[in-house]
Length: 260
Image (cartoon, rainbow, N blue to C red; front, side, top):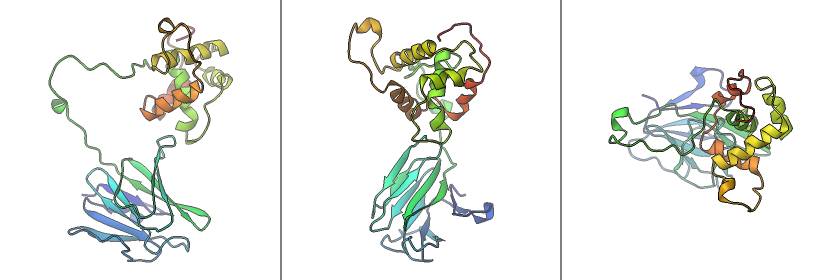
C-alpha cells in the first residue's frame, strides 16, 4: 500500500500523481532514467519523474518512501533545494548540494528547486500518520500539566489568532498586524474592542506564555522587544493556533469581560 504521493508539476488529476509504497524510490531530473551518484539499495523499487527544464540537472535527486515519512537526496552539485511546509507558516528545511537521505517530517511538502533564474516546484504528500492508542499512552496516574494552557473562548485567544492570521493564510513572512489592525479584525465579534484592550491582551499573553515574568515577580526589568513577533513565532511553532482556530475572529462574543 502506498504511503507517499508525489504531485508532479502541471499535474491535471490523480492519474498524473505518483504513488510510492515503503521501499519505493522515485528519481527525478531532466533526463529520464538517470540514476546519478546515489545508488539504489537492495530491494528498493525505482521509478522516475522527468522535469523538462534546461536548468534542472539530468539527475537532480531522489525521493525514498518510508512508512510515514520520506527522505530526499539532492544529487545536484551546486543547487540547494528547499522543502516547504505550505501549512507551516514559513516552516521549511534546506537540503544542500550532495546531501543524501535528508528526512522530511511534513505531511504536505513543496520541493522548490532553482532552475536557470526560475523556481520550479512539485508537491509530496505523506498522508499516513501513526499515533499511540489510548492503551499505549503510559501508566495511569496524575495527568501531566499542559505546557501552554490556553482557553479558546477567551478574548486573549482571539487576539493571538488575529496576530497569527496572516501567516496561517499563506503569507509565511508577513509581519504581525498592528494593534489597530487587530482591533479592526476583531470588531465583528467584539464590538467593544479598543487599542488599550488589545494591547492589554498582548501583554497578558506574553506573561501567560512565559515570554516575560509576571509583574509581581519582577518590579522592573528590560522591555520585551518584538513582543508580537515572539508570540506569533511561539504559537505557530507549537501549533497553539491553527487555521481552524481562525473562526474565533468572527464568532459572536460569548463573554462579557472587556479584556480577556
